[in-house]
Length: 397
Image (cartoon, rainbow, N blue to C red; front, side, top):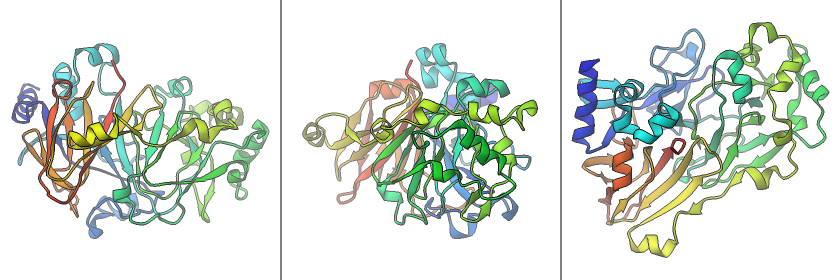
């Protein structure tokens, strides 16, 4: 551990409180890759065809992917890049130097980094599913999972097969109807989407999805800040004529409750699911962080893109061509560059055109609490192209 502490200190010192993170790729056996992750075409099945295609990239993650018995040892976990031959898990680094990375207040209140983000990139929609609330997740020793969505324009050159997401349940839906859908799992299409409604996904906007809400994510590439958890239960058994294994319904259910239909209904926040003003309460258009003209005068534009959860938030930052801006934030954050090239502090940054599996990139970083508060000078070295990054924050201290 002493060697790892030295590596963390080296990364922090060389980047003056900013360090690079290596790409963390995650496959899903029940997904078809949308191929918008900039991964090389030959590498989407790099974990093996039996694991399914890679359709997620996780950012600033201290959470291991829960992908069944074939999950690899570090799947979903972020590594800090130190040099060509050395790296250290972000999870381990925070255990060793949490105060230096996250700050005293965050460590005292939360005990670590309790959020992460990802790109979700699927060609078709996912099954209608739910993430557990804290109360229900506690039954299996986990935390609940609120999440959020943002659809970056730069990474949505095509919309996939179904760029609509079903959210919640129609007002008036009964618990008995849901129980019947689950009882029909191995008999016929349970047709649960007939009890829900779909919303057209709009690039440059987002949604807030608290735990307990059923949702069937559509086929836009999605930036997903979320709590550090990977619990879920699938509620839809047939998606585009493909069967969803019942194990994905039962994955995070206590052994003695796996056949208890009433227990599954308890996973749902009924009030949120049947909210007649769901769109008004959950849709998130971007909001300028400051008056636009003031920001443009200073060489940048910044928007709050995730702002309805107490557990995480996110911003989209654009540095205008040929400009520099000193950007200050209240707390530590992970960042992913999605357009352009330049410098963040002393580190070169760029959005790559294509990435090989296992290749290091210069598009993902982590900014420590001290550096965020003091401000990081970000420079766009292009005279013509915007420099754009997405920034994800954990819960405030």
